[in-house]
Length: 382
Image (cartoon, rainbow, N blue to C red):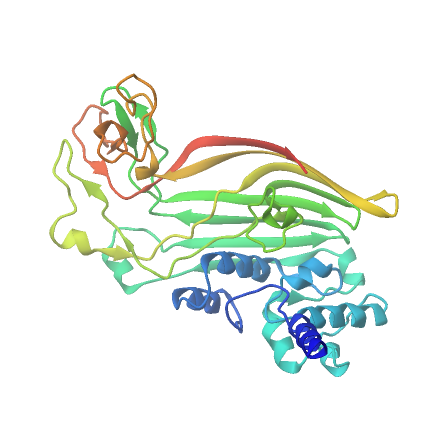
């Protein structure tokens, strides 16, 4: 009986998936990934992880074991087989189909990870390589609006020599508010109406070898399998990752989001039900510099040492704000901002900036994300 139990345990662990995603992932592009999220087949965390792999790609010639573990649909034996095949090929996989011929992967598994992997030949790493793409979307209801153009985004990712990467992500938004400021006349915030704006939220340059990791610009970082610091969305983060991700919602967006204040709300009648194609969005991550030593010899083993500093502006949903000077108890001490019974702890109103004089009567913004509310400064060592 003991032998049978031991055999069962060995079989179970050998077939365990390297990264435990909720379902078998068979996609070709981000649209397929969006469908999995909309259907509830994967969680938001899994979506972020897979989108990161999809946009960044995993190079079969340079990926370490942790990066290969993150690929969907593979178990530990599959990853070991990929590494063994790569070593047998002297570190260069010229054609992923060779993994099937050698028995390292089945044809179905190779097809299932095809969207997430890249193969760069050694000589190609000495040349400028990469891509730039432009994206737009359109909904028939857009023709009934006053917008001059549909949402637009562009992203570029390039490599030079063997270890240098750089890239960007830019987008034209139409539904994003102007930056909020304090209005002393109303003792409240005030922000401009949505307008057509150009943003370059992601731009980076990265130099990385087996021993050193350097990055500047937009990036993410994670260490200790999420036990210390992590904003990478990866299951097994270990170091810096460049950040050039843009997101797109498949749901249409409401155009009119203004409530009555000094003027009646314009969002009445048919205006309440006007929808438009949403803008591309991005998540506010780290923006600064990072440096790391990936393999420092220490006796019979080795250590890693990373340091980073970031200064990034952050956006906040308007109903997550509160006034610390007004949200106080009877003794004047600050209280929890989640006390919905206290009007002093309610989110402050955000008025619409008038087109003319700032003292002209106006309405209030409703259900909006306020851009660039505060600046987050971070520094860390790991």
